[in-house]
Amino acid sequence: MPRDTEAIERDIENARNQLAETLDVLAVRTNPKRLVETTKHNLLAKLNEPAVKAALIGAGTVVGFLVLRKIFR
Image (cartoon, rainbow, N blue to C red; front, top):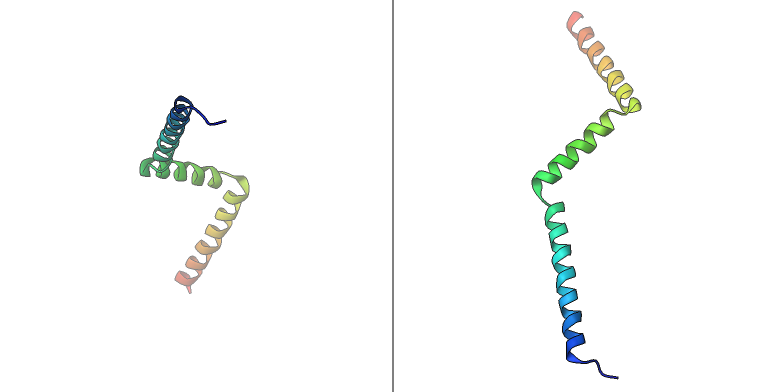
């Protein structure tokens, strides 16, 4: 049974609305300021994990020790 033109027009309008919503979401997600904020937040959250903090402290201690050793030799 063929579809009437009103049903086709409703389908087209619904598709347009969905596309507009999708484009709005993509525009928000790809905003450079938002990307920077999200990346910064994720990085800070990762750095605040105890295992990562311990590794950074350990690496800093080793580097500091090597620098001091080089200076005093």
